[in-house]
Length: 249
Image (cartoon, rainbow, N blue to C red; front, side, top):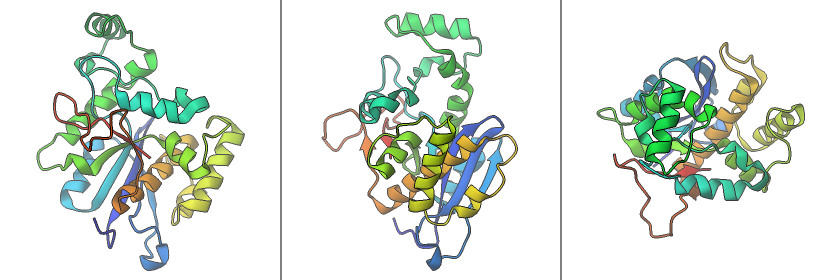
């Protein structure tokens, strides 16, 4: 996949919907001259649709894509092992049958009934709507699902640093560490980092989306690290709808 003339997007869920950082797939801004942009959009389908039109080569999203019908995802276990002290940043993905349930008690009872007694955290429940919206967007007609990839920003930061970061992102020290790594390693996003945070988003969202841009560029270049939790057979685990369960960094 040639990066020439192409763009990638790093997407993170935020209070206002989806925080989207768009940058050139080519990490050398001197060859392109186009600045990165940042925006908040309400509908993830608008962003995924840019893959269909050819505007974007890759959309990286910090949100589960492939979902099991029962049991934890092997890719989540692999990501947690790699993150060690930061493993809590990878939350357990909900099972697919929970999508569409808008009541926590009903979702919790359904999870326990279908998933061998495994419950559902409030955090996971609060993301069901966003996960369902992404699921619809990825499966829309004309969308190449291989160009919409799941990314864990904390894994991206760990690879940038060479180790899991010591401080969580919600502390001042943690944000400073992540910003420094982005400035040092992700060319062409200075204006995003130095500019105002869009309404409906937080500083953490911007940092995470920029880290996802770094991984999206690596996907274009064919060098992204893949966490599957499965044997190295060359075949990804897929869910009942054929969506790959892979976390990239």
